[in-house]
Structures are given as structure tokens and as C-alpha cells.
Length: 184
Image 1: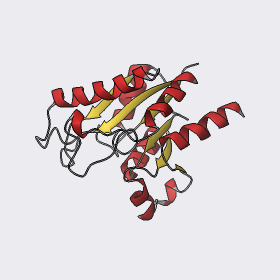
Image 2: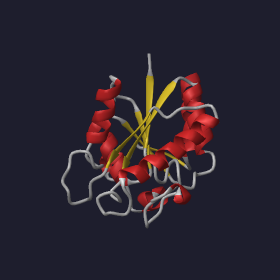
Image 3: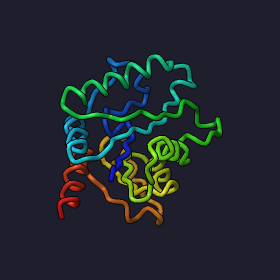
Image 4: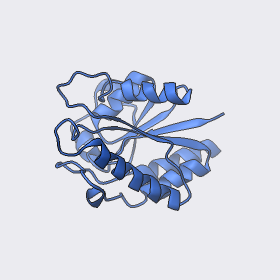
């Protein structure tokens, strides 16, 4: 049986930026994130990234720039012995009213469709409330990491329907816990 873990990108794999990550030069990987992805792969998980990238609709970068950033992240993971199966992204802005921009579940539903895997019980790791809301709406297990915007997300308080969300310092801490649960 194939297992799936879905990750947000900015704030989970790489450092978040209020001015958007627009190039490979601005993409700074969070220490331990690459190794965490490799550990998931080694444990039999497929790893897919689901990310809002409104910088495209804002004219801050184009899809070619975004592809370079994703290629860079993939190469770092592959050189360490892991694999990211796909990057699925929403290029729309907050006011475009699309179905794919988190907190709507469209990106996650696309992943389920493309990979033929159920989302029920699948962990979706993010650092923002909209990540958690998208996870819940799609039937995934929402996981909050305190890297990126995670600390602020927690300080702002989680709505009652997300109070049972598992919370970790970062992606590496989540993976350590998840693999321990798998072994139990």
C-alpha cells in the first residue's frame, strides 16, 4: 500500500518570505527539511508539495521561475537520496476565487486524483491556518509546524475544529514522530 504525505512549501521546506520567494537565490532551505523528506521516502511514503504561489498572479515571478525553484528543491532532495513526486501549485491571487487556492481543498483533491490515493488519514503539513483548513476540507490530517508562519498561526489561536491538530517544531520533528508512530 502506498502512503502519501503532502507538504506545504514556504515555511515547511524552505524559509518563508513576506516578499515572496521569486528565485533560486531567494530559496533558503530550512535546516533538516531535506533529510526529513528523505526519511519519509525511505519509510515508503510518497511526498507531494501543495503550495499557493500568488506571486505569479502578482507579476513577481513567472511559471518558468517557479519551475526553477521547484527543480532546485527537487535536486537537493534527490542528491540526499529522496524524491518529491510532484509540486502542485495555485498561481492565483487571493481575490481570484479559484478552487485551488488554500484554504479551499482543490490542490489536495488534484493530488488525490493524479496519484489515485485517498486523502483520508493522509498528513498535510503546513505552517498557516489556510493549510490546516485545506487539509481538513479535503479529509487529510492537518499538521502544524512552528517554522515559517507556524508560531504566529498558533499565537492567533486555532479554531475549535482544529484544536486536535498535531503540532511540531518543524518538518524534521514531525517526521521523527510519524516514523515512531509507524513503528509502534
